View 1 (cartoon, rainbow, N blue to C red):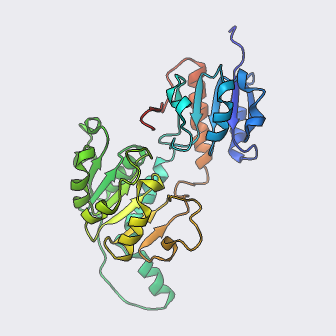
View 2 (view 1 turned 30 degrees about the vertical axis):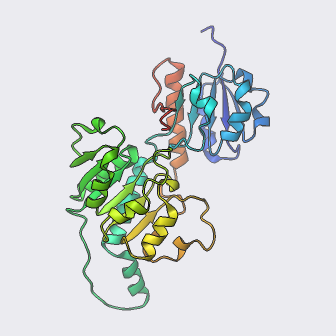
View 3 (view 1 turned 180 degrees about the horizontal axis):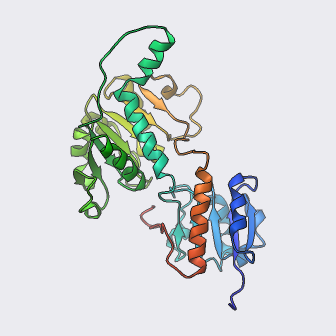
Length: 324
């Protein structure tokens, strides 16, 4: 082949169980694993590929001037807000991410959240625990509108499942022309259609990446436009929703409830209002943590690595300037 064997830097905790999959890389590949810049300092000038797990930005920034040979960066996460910095954004090095890898369990979790409120599962559990037989009316998801803000992989996974329940799907996306001919969608909006989408949605799924445009996108004004019977579901990034405004809207019963997997600060601080609200279903950012979730992400990287070695186009290329 004549090419020298590739050097792969993996910025991750060496005890992470899923790293065992790295043994599936070609024997000749040199693999360096560590959490700090020091761990990668000597190998950095030789690195062809860098794999970033967790919050790798400070390490990447420190190593950046030494990564002269780097030809590909892969993020183990689907969101890039914890990784991007100016030099990386402006460089020509291709960046891929685990886009879509975690979408299926998140699509299921969106359904769980909607069913939780439609069937009032909290009340059922409470009545059962209190030994009370008290029939009550509940709602169907059939015929209800799921409004999706950020119609990417998570949004589509939720829409596919909601459609099977007979729900209507209204989606807002940055490039609505990409939705032409999408059989899942009943309505599609560009960024200027947010108010209209909010007014129609019975369930509002925030599944957008965190960018300067989406930060605080669902805020006080949005809660004023939503139905009082509407439920917000945030499975994307915490700061896409204005947390203080959401707490106020929930306390005032301005909206019916919220299903939250992501927060401004994680872990959510002790004593936070969300813990005490009976109209919140709270997940500790683990809605996609199936037993194999990191194995799935590693499988995706290894499949991409095989393509890279063979000179084929990479999957899940990110638009660094757009931020996803």
